[in-house]
Image 1: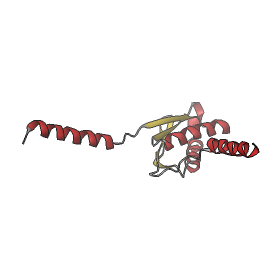
Image 2 (image 1 turned 90 degrees about the vertical axis):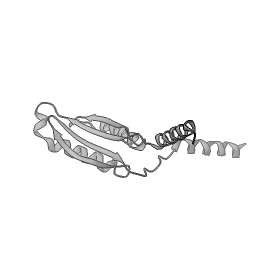
Image 3 (image 1 turned 90 degrees about the horizontal axis):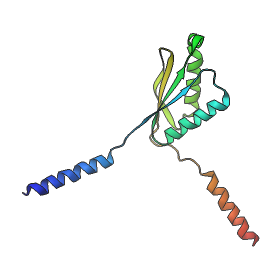
Image 4 (image 1 turned 135 degrees about the vertical axis):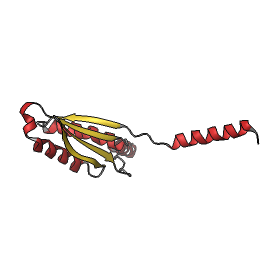
Length: 134
């Protein structure tokens, strides 16, 4: 058996194994317990985008001053986020108070539903109606 041929075959097998390997990134979102509704929705949109991209998300609630005395507010906020994104991801680690931060990790579900492309559908309708008018 030719050593060069064997070495080449092993290298090709290693490359194929590396191609099939999946890298999972951990993205982090930081919140405060006194977050407004609009800001919360914006952060939820970021988490949704990360989960759809197949990344894990570490959600951190940062407490300052006397806010540490009310960890229930932070846990309530994390549970609300998890329930809003229930169809996209699941809780990998439950909310846990770590010093002045409360941390929860969410991971994407195996089959996340594809995001509906609303913009392209509207364009097709306008093209069809403009063609019908002509």
